[in-house]
Image: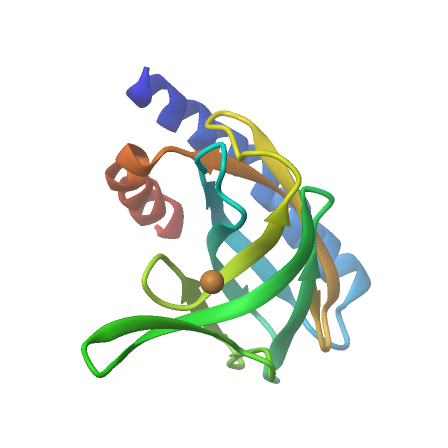
Length: 167
Ligand SMILES: [Cu+2]
């Protein structure tokens, strides 16, 4: 089951990615050219109030861009967070200045590091479903995503997908 799900997710990504890239080139040629790859959200327990979403954001433009905010119909609000060690304790804090995406560079949002937080979930994120997410960039504008929900046990499979996706 896990394997076929990972494959299905990979196929879904493969078909979704070119469309996104194309939209970026059509509408934002002169400003930002942002592409989101390998987006996924982690499944949540029924009582869990918040969820995390992770992805690789690439900026194909010669100028830096910045992820400034996000939104989702699945949550009351979307925040940009980071995690860091503070006196031996992992702490999460909001990145109120957004996340800089370097010119011709990429930023990886992943568990234990920078991530997107869905605050006030309207229901649990269920493995196999997708979550609608819009990311707003300073220059590239809004990027709309259908983010697949994955189980915690599928993180190894996700790593494999990412290697394949990047090359
Ligand atoms: Cu968070």
